[in-house]
Image (cartoon, rainbow, N blue to C red; front, side):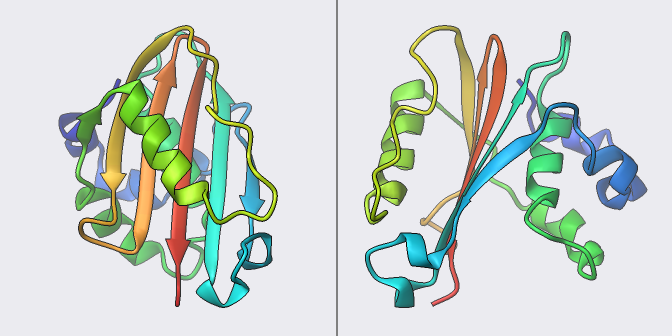
Length: 155
């Protein structure tokens, strides 16, 4: 699993190079827009991004690609500081699932949880949380898959 030190080894231009961050093999995601929530005026959004884990990959490029999918076109200059300010707080699988459940609680149609079976958990990170922002960005690594959970509100 990656950490802040891995991010620091990247060259600045790589963080905004779509060939590096925009094309992780197998990346796919599901978006729950504001109208998927009980109170649309809360302007919440959830994006769950997944990809099969490539052999020998620590997940950093997957995370950057998952964040890039949020739509940084025209705002590329802010991507570097956004990822640099992430918390990189290591958490357990139970903590990951609790945070996902907490942010998914207002969906009109419940999302099947946990996001992955309880087999093959490697590690998880809190990158952003409600402690500091109106953003929750979580990363989980399993033996066969990477998952990125992203929640925000513009309200």
